Image (cartoon, rainbow, N blue to C red; front, side, top):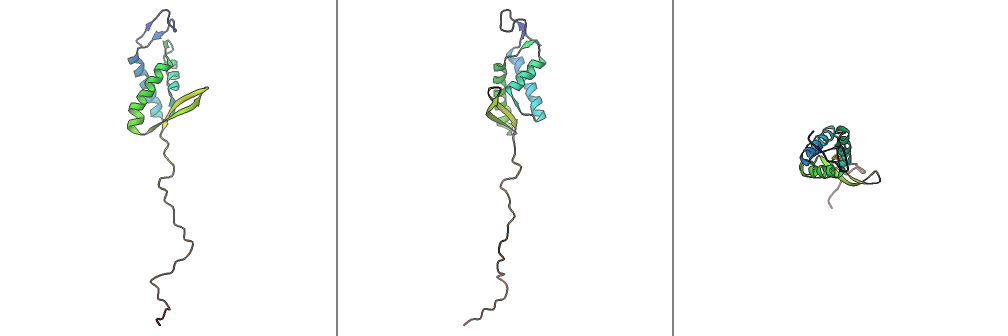
Length: 132
């Protein structure tokens, strides 16, 4: 992993990952969620990266920007297979949730079977009408 240690930083003794490397790692994690069809938030991606890169300082704010922009540009806008739900309650705050698009279970428009409530007369049947 490329990175440098910055003495006196918030993460003393931890590696700092540059933006390009972080974007590649984020893309890998997001791809695993998408391939699995599993809903996720940017924080889920951050947690997965922190678990994967234990000696590297992973800042959630940076990950969130990459996830949100990447999902907006490539997945949500282009494929239509994923949707974004903003304002989901999450750990005392709110988050943006990405999930596979939830297609209706009933096709629209709904095709209803006609229900006959009264028998209509057969217009082709002979009548007993006699002219005057």
